Image 1: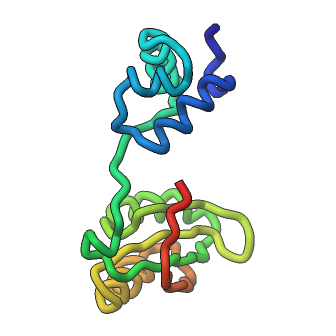
Image 2: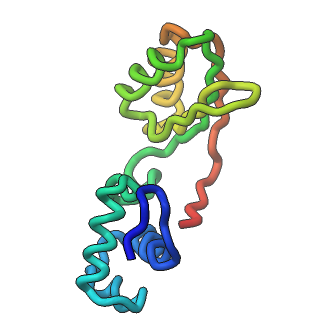
Length: 149
């Protein structure tokens, strides 16, 4: 049973949960866990990729063990209509791991990971704050990460 793009059923949800838990598992193992045939699992995964539900596969790293001992959430207040320009500039800063446009007291929420606090300071003061369109920043240092996935 095919679904329309953007709509997923219970089997798709199980497949997505399994791939989120372990994206390296074989399709055969995934099919067994979800109780469908291997061919059906391949077809479902391909459709989820074609529909844009699965956008990419990646490794989840422990930032501290990877040498990124300092992390922070950084909020930005932007000039009105400044989002597009700022978004492009943020995508070029390798220490930024996640960018969200949000509503509320600030406009953008960033996850920044750096080697140490000096490196974090460099990223915020030298690369983020001077961006055209950025009116204000606030930095929230992360003391401990808990990966719930």
